[in-house]
Length: 157
Image (cartoon, rainbow, N blue to C red; front, side):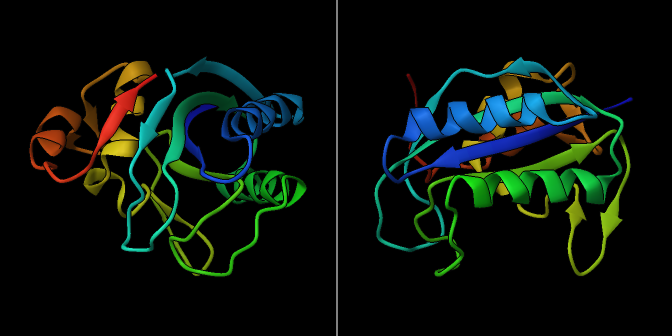
């Protein structure tokens, strides 16, 4: 089993219900066990697209799935919850991103681990801090990365 950290977010409809349903669906997947969940955070949208605030959490899961099988399950859940990929960084019912997969690194046309922009996003790092065992992640200090992020609004709910 490998520990993987995921980031979940929603800014359409009943955000909390959608995030909670995604967590439930992940827990129902064979080969995935949800081990820890962060607090809920309301965050300003990132990426320059005008839209509603997001509700974000981080999850720690143990999985026997490969990184690509885990991605397939995350995308299956996104489709189940009516995720549409229309505008990059635009509004979405649910977003389930793989942040880490043990200490493995993956880089191909479908998947990049660690998540390529995780150290630039408070909405990823703040919830992740709630549940991760160490400040260091792939050789980066989460606390130091957060010190460099001063332009992103985030509020614990």
